[in-house]
Length: 416
Ligand code: AMP
Image (cartoon, rainbow, N blue to C red; front, side, top):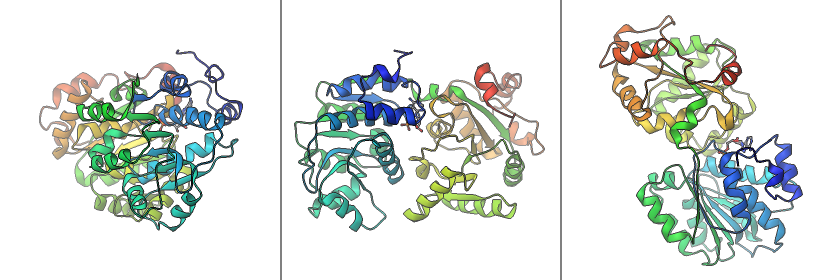
């Protein structure tokens, strides 16, 4: 399975060509495990988080099924429905289908809130082969009879755990109730909490289970470090770090929306082009910021956890936790934004005096300490020595690169 090639997965030529054009050499584990089952029409539960290649794991076989079974989508309906929790993720999944389907002649529709519904209604009116949607707006369109789901042949529920976290369960149930019973169904989730298993039992028929490395191990390629710093020095420390050109594309996390805006302003004062992305920004501002970041027009994107959920940008060299998250699982999600699909990345976390408990919770979740770096001018002994710090510190100082193999270490250009 490990050394499988894309050419062995039985993909049709136009799809295979698109994969090659993307520069993919080998299927990722979830792709190798899922694609053959999905091509044969099985239902599937995939336990995988973003960054594992899960989008292609479902998009490629779905495109394959559409291309081998030509049919016209009925008006106002779609042959494939993919539900995602956020607009950003919907846009990115939609883009992936277009990219992998570029040599096929398929129609696409994207439906999400926060923007006018007119163009979305139009794109659905004649029927679309592939519809990617967030639950709320899709239900709106269904209620207005602009969208009907009777033509759906394949249904994908992406990031089911986040959907539930965000309170979408009732919406999802209503959407599932409107789908034809005879269909292929796929569910992806980063975790398999009992409520996900219950949801899966109600919607899947004899599913194949595919599980790839649990979230904590996807961070193995990330070189992590903790920098103890007083809150009042955080902005100066960040400005200093950003002087290093090796920080080519940095995703910076703050705890609050206000904090994100303030930081963007402060970075502007030291001539760092940064943009913020959070829930108070309009959809068009979020899309523009993300696009600027993706194409390299802005080097630093400042985000809150919720806004960052759908971000799927390749080549993020650094994730910087300006504030540590109070939810330890968020730390894993955050740092997973770098080191995508096998590349190495660096995660730098600032930890102030008042954040020591957050750090303790994170290290408990990881079941290991995070290496500390104190060789910077803003190192704070008082933050370092707050609650229960010394043992972890002493254990770590020795070798901050401990988890990185030589090959990946050499891919990290500089120490910071
Ligand atoms: P995902 O988990 O779907 O968010 O994908 C993570 C990233 O991996 C995306 O940016 C894809 O472009 C990339 N990717 C997906 N499959 C492969 C592959 N087989 N080889 C290299 N990169 C891939």
